[in-house]
Length: 491
Image (cartoon, rainbow, N blue to C red; front, top):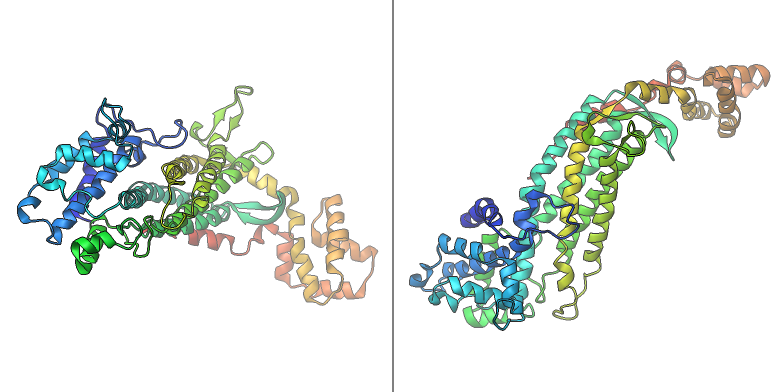
């Protein structure tokens, strides 16, 4: 990335976004408008990124020697800042639609160029937008915004979430908890293992999204993708050099095979991965709200940050953050559907989807909101060890039926599945006894030499697990502790 662009994005755009009268409304519900995203996705900041692409195209023409040295002197940082401070999307709209008392241009990029010329020396006017077409600027601006939003705003927030998540995994790595399948008690796990499984998915999705954010390309290939205008103006070698230089300045990949529009698949893959990440966070929310319910009571709200008091029952803590995570996932799905429905374009370009593309970024707004909620949710997540133990012990004697089945099967006893599920487990449940004791009683009342022999050959280690089901947790602790050390990497 060009040093000037780094400075503009990191220092100047936040200042520009705070100028009086700036409309920073972002796509999506006005209720969810994360401040950190506004310098990039606020409505009036869209023009800023269009200006940036146009400006660095001017710098590119200077760099390759197409612009005489005496005219390059007009390309000053102060002049760029002047453009950014004076031209907002609202101002651009007014020029496009004639809301400023003059006949409108009826074209957004023509309006932008007219406005830019007001603040540029006349010597630069003939180079402005030279050889480009409108969607060269627009597509490249979209790619630039996507990359910068994820790398500058999402990345630091995701690293914070990763840290607090791994801290919780470590804290609860050895707390034995009833596993659940179909919401029914199953083999034991640990609280840390439950969190570790979701964290693994989180880490995987984030790393994929980070990579995909860096390869969404810009394009500067002209009206139909052949670069005919650039070749006619610059010649083949300089045309290619100019395209490569611009993308290097903007720190973007260059799409070589395009129509007027960049291939949509790269951006789509990013948004689809963002959807998958949202799904993981939604899954966490679903699990927390279940475990925090009165029936389970295993997750408690350490602070009021993670809950709200019901207006109908003031003593009841509602898992509002967990539920918000679930709902926000639906918002992300709905917004990403726009991306999925706009993957086609007739021949070299049409305008059907341009209005839809303007709000693609709402998926990022909702996803970032969900990530921020996840941070607060995990920080305040606490476990009630008493309820965890009580819930597990309620059916602990029965959940290791799998092990009993395996022990008998290993010794060659036929019909183990029916015996264990239809006879031994029901008997143990009815009498409130362990499975080994139920087996003993069954053999006393139903002598069976083959079964007796299979049972006698059951290893002592397996018998111990049948008596102490809380030890039948496999690698749960090991895997939880390992995942707690798996720091999220985005490099």
